[in-house]
Image 1 (cartoon, helix red, strand yellow):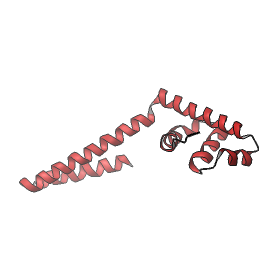
Image 2 (cartoon, helix red, strand yellow; image 1 turned 90 degrees about the horizontal axis):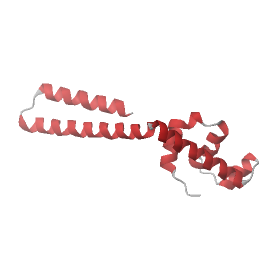
Image 3 (tube, helix red, strand yellow; image 1 turned 30 degrees about the vertical axis):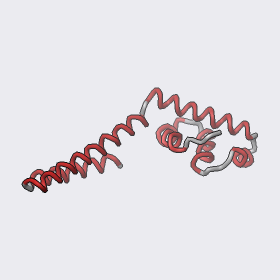
Image 4 (cartoon, helix red, strand yellow; image 1 turned 60 degrees about the vertical axis):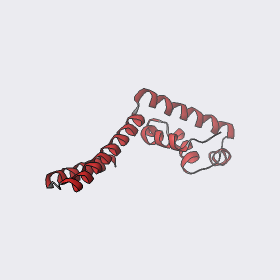
Length: 121
């Protein structure tokens, strides 16, 4: 079973609280603690196949929630937009430094970069 760490952990951050405690635990053991199916099965007292089925079912639910709600996609889009805003502010700052050094422009750039940074956290 191939692990898709980044995607599942992101979806788990957004939708993990909507899973059952057992589903969330299995996904955390598998993706965050890097336990094998056999290790999880031994710890939980069930079969390896039972663990695999539970993880696959939970992954499916995470993907369904993302398909319906799109929170992770929207978050990624906002992060990309904030990065582009920061890059544009840097270009404005550099141009201002070369052409005339307006204090107002400099202050506006600092504010834009501060706000973009705060929103991306």
